[in-house]
Amino acid sequence: MTKVVEEKFSISYDADEGDLNNHEIGALALGRSILGVNDAVSQANALINKGAEVKLKVSAPVREGSIIVDFLLLASTPNALALLKYLGFSGAVGAVAGGSLIEVVQKLKNRKVAKVTIEAESNVAVIEVDGEKIECDKYVAQLAVDKKVRDSLHNVIQAPISGKKNAKFKVLNEQEIEVLVIDEAVAHSFSPLPVGSLESEEITKETTTVYFVQVNFNSKRGWRIKLADGQEYAVELNDNKFMANVNQNKQTFSKEDLFEVILEKRSLYRQTRSSYQYTVVEVTNHFTDKDRRLV
Image (cartoon, rainbow, N blue to C red):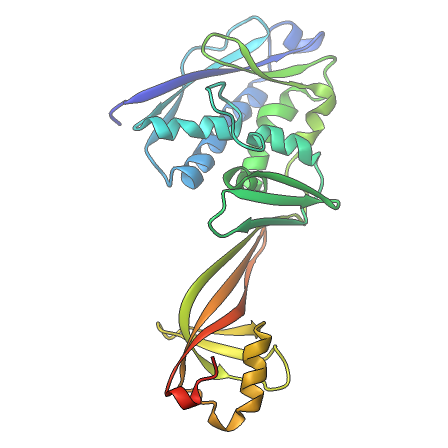
């Protein structure tokens, strides 16, 4: 990779007793921590930068003064470095609205995520846990419910300091100024993603043309549409006015007629499977002779 820009940051562990107090850390714990930082950076890059070329390096040996590991992120564009802000590993100017990944995961307090809603054309997501709604950036929300990312944060933050007296995890910028501090007492918030958590819910709407290949004159359920590319989907029809017009003109309704509709797609991404629900929010046009139009 041709280096264009770079940003340095460090992570630090210290405690009042034990190995960390003696500037030591288990090789396995350190290895998992470094790998965790790498995995988090890789996942964030794939999501935010769509796989732009970045390279993470450990730029110096582990240093004393507690335990400090220096990292150097190389990127092909300045924008690609922004992923560090999303993760919480950067003190660069311009905070992420709603908090970084580390800050949002701390707010979740290791609770099972019930729902993540991302509206179409919006940069804001809403995470629901125990009846509480937490607003944050859409990329942060998706990272916060990604199992691999949560495992990475556990290995980077919680595992090295868990059970150690007055232990702290710190992120330092290039000038070694503290950007973030997590005390051992709250590090349990960075446990792996709870089993049964919903990974993500995304809602999109688009205007498209469809054929109604299956109808139900008695219910908004039981309808089926066919798109221009030949794909068919079961849908719920939520346009009451159109439903009423269809019932008044059953004889003239034809499955060969082309309609313009606003179609909502609700995508549910879970750890074990994904599902999709389609709703016709509104029928906006009926492409047929004037005397047969239902819209």
